[in-house]
Image (cartoon, rainbow, N blue to C red; front, side):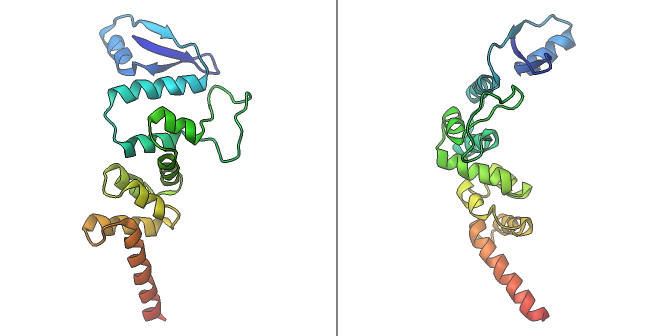
Length: 178
């Protein structure tokens, strides 16, 4: 059973059952398709709901997913002119969909939008906490990466304390070289 949705070009998109569809095609069995009747926001809610039941995600993992789908900018209003390819989702709606706090979504969105790939990976691997990652996400990418390296090596307990260490080392280097 696969659920599809037509995009703005009239082409079907698989919302649920992508692997089942691939298996049907491989086995040359006609798949049973069900048309999804709803807008882009309803499709997103459907996909999130289906995947939450299948996966055993931690609070941080759910917050990171919410941070990725929360795309409504602060002060921006939802509009009926949004096309089906890009529904806008408020942080509060993303938090509700993924059963996390709005604060966790804000932190995750900051890490998703400003954090280096290494910082995001460290959060995913649970090397750095979401709260800690959000504290350093505004810093330059090399500093974020150095902080992750310090935490992974065990030299620092948190990325925030590692950035203080990295900054101190940079100051020392600049004094020595001048």
